[in-house]
Length: 312
Length: 241
Image (cartoon, rainbow over all chains, first blue to last red; front, side, top):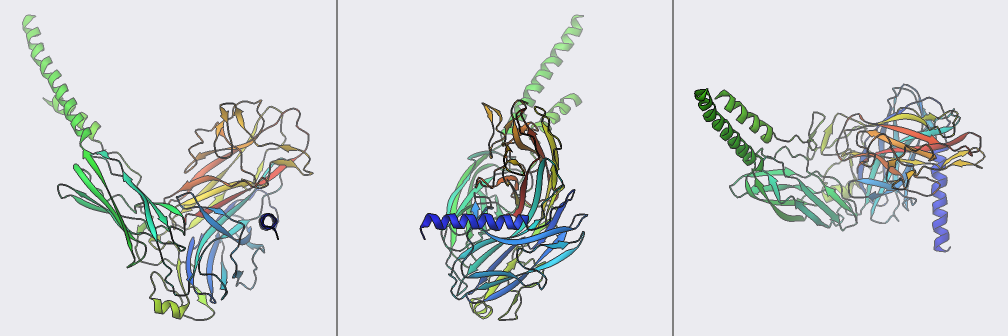
């Protein structure tokens, strides 16, 4: 089959499956969609030839029953802040089915108001599956609204990400790079320093940066900010945030050296980069200057007023 | 003397007031819990082995024996907020449209993303509003046009009642900055046109009951063919990975 025909076929299949996913349930009118889902993310490393099941708990938080359909779609990272875009291709030699007796993938089921249901996802990895990362989202969609004359019906969908690594030895190589690490060169002494860190994953499996940003002043001041261990997916970039900035002291003064250092896995290789900034008490200085000016004005007025009284 | 002290204090308080910051991942709703596993929906099971859950870094020998390792939930956060998404109404009915008189309707989106490092809500329409026969449609808005032309990613002013189409405005938490106020609109991307879904809410932080109001607006010309016009919109809420 020619490549463009294959691509067309894949696109048509995607739209068909998406339409079936959305339309496969009965329309309703005047309803609310409110679902909660657990876990919001599942990270699974598995050997080829193995099978595993995982419970997903879906709860109907609305006041009306909701007809739900579940489906898996693959995704790729979108941007550098953990967003996703859904893709057409499904992984080869990995099979996803539901292990519930009363439920099949793509088949609608009704969840009454205030009720919960365990949906059991069965993941079968064939011996032929390629050792790689596979990123999917397990989606739960409501029925579309109806009963409108002119308007728009809506479908609510909630999803949970599945980061699947197929690995024989459980230790896929991880390689990363700090693309950018910077801070404002000059800050006010009362300002909290902010840091921008972007990390590139140059391997075929995702990792979580495990480390911190250490800030050290020339006068011996020292504090550290732990990095948030968000996932950097294979062959993608991600902006890494600090888990908290409350460790910053309330007053900074002078030059500071900032070092970010993190490992890609426990006992794994570390990445390190440094930056500098200078803290000046600009606001405090302005306050002192304004106060001195005001004092000067008050003093001069006090000198002037008695003279006027004497004259009168 | 009192007057002097008061002025000096006032100046210091005004200039030295420390700016307030939105705390980056620290609130009553969670705590950083490095290395602990957060399982909420039962242990995984294997058809090959019956060893239950392994979390974090597993010794190579144990991995070979189990054949898998699993981490469910955001392992560094112990949260009391589940990941939840609410759409207040699944039907947006404009009723009978009057040419040159825009019709509007609203619903609310609400997200609680306590167990995740933030969230994203996207939206996409099936197609333009169309008659059931598909012979006539109401095109997506381009807003006022000229310098105020909107598209799927950029909102613009839409106050001119001689400009026709279908679009939406967002007001509330975590919405794109392009929605300057309630008069800014943009069209939905279309599944039929193979467009990418638009992000309508997004945050890198945990949050409870983050809410946005969507205002849908349609305006038709006098030459618009009579009939009922419909489409559907899919809102997808996912945590950040």
